[in-house]
Length: 347
Length: 279
Ligand SMILES: Cc1cc2nc3c(=O)[nH]c(=O)nc-3n(C[C@H](O)[C@H](O)[C@H](O)COP(=O)(O)OP(=O)(O)OC[C@H]3O[C@@H](n4cnc5c(N)ncnc54)[C@H](O)[C@@H]3O)c2cc1C
Ligand code: SF4
Ligand code: SF4
Ligand code: FES
Image (cartoon, rainbow over all chains, first blue to last red; front, side):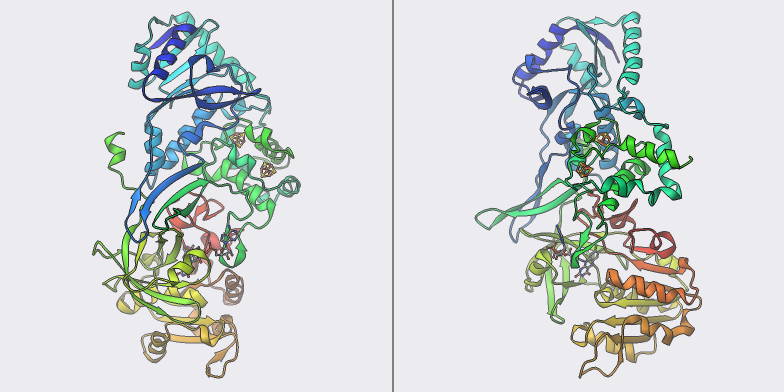
């Protein structure tokens, strides 16, 4: 697959043409002094110099709320999933790693066609980070760069982008550029330098071990009942902000609604979070994780051990730093917790 | 959309089924015989469960109470405990429900073959255990001896009474029963289910013990079993969890790293019973 060099205005024209086509084009836009993914009205809105988006791009594969089924009461249930064709522009490497993980999870064992159909209809134009956010630690998690999952990867080179196509879709897209040169060896060298620098720059919280060691750490006997869970969780509101903003959290709730005519209804799923109080409550008010500390620990164990065991050891924290920013009591940072454990526990 | 995904089945789509029989067995437990409208058998294993859908209300996990050896539909026992189960209680013969499943692994029959078995059931725990008990009764040569201990809170709450009477009379199993509270119509044992354990002491050696009941029961039964040095490998527990998807995605049923909807709800005590948050 090819690597091209596109002047920024050439790339902008490409985006403008996409917006003019009949498919949905979503990109990163400014929202006050922060950034969010949203439908692009014009190419100028696109801000590939952003630091981090408020919500991760997972919402396009796993919407906050999604109708699964429609039915007439007493009649058959019908699949209702939608999977609009769209191009998603400006996904950062750490968020793409999270998407890659989720792709594996939703495809494995029982194939979740709602997620997968959406995913398969999304063309991803990823971009390397230009401005590190204040809490990013992708450098520590090995997610400052990414080598798969995108159709096109952009790297900002000042007045131009290096654009690498990784799929036929990506190749087709770049072929539409009015003017594009093949990247020179010097350009590719310069890109490697950007990657190298990003590994260092995107590291506002430094993990004191290799990410691959985290499951080993959590497996140590002393960890499960370590005082850190109580220490941190004593300040936890169980508000669920840390799980909502997380690109790797995918737990959901399922509910039914009937229409006003009482004849038709739908079943939908919505984001849920294991830190919320009643996530594990069953009939008879029995809550299997009644204590905040239990739920807080569960979240960290999910990121560092349970989910990794499903996806070949990859850690389900990509270091985006969103939970660090979102948590009003400043306890959600996984690095703080892992480092605190590392002080007491030998791996 | 590519062909490979459009051809995959929808794991959240219930298939329609019809209520063939219903019977309120006591104040809270409803018996249902259900047949898939496709005419196919459910094809379950003892100990598995289905997700039952009531349109407009929702879905909930219910154990399959009948043995797979029984054809012509499958049976459920549903306690009126909340919104979906309340709606299930309103179903009449001929009404439609949605069914997904069977889910979970249920009992690992291969681990139980040729063994002496003791089923300890508390209350509604009888419902799932019954799928195994009747399976064993239909395949007696595959298993050793069968002992069933049943504890119910109070006499009026007993269900499957006719079947229990048959179990008590027959000579293909040892059946002992108790109720927690005295009652005028009850002449049998009184006391919690653990009080039955010493009565079958001689059966405990070399047996696999299968426990199923409400969360509070496990602690007491497991404590009582400790006295008999039964290896934890030989104790099986049947665990309830909150469940939404039944297919390992939604995260609700997790006990630590274990997905009860996929690998459960039956576990060896050695595997999981001793895990924190499990019991
Ligand atoms: C594998 C498995 C097998 C089962 N087998 C059977 C069976 O054979 N028969 C049977 O009767 N039941 C069985 N159950 C239990 C059954 O699934 C529950 O009783 C049922 O899901 C309750 O659903 P509901 O909609 O009726 O109740 P809900 O309306 O969901 O509420 C019931 C109760 O659940 C608790 N609860 C639910 N949601 C919340 C919340 N958000 N916050 C706080 N508390 C909440 C409360 O205590 C509430 O009173 C089984 C469960 C599992 C996991
Ligand atoms: S850790 Fe922070 S963000 Fe997460 S639930 Fe607790 S208080 Fe909310
Ligand atoms: S746990 Fe926090 S830092 Fe890690 S991926 Fe989730 S939101 Fe980002
Ligand atoms: S019930 Fe959803 S993961 Fe088990």
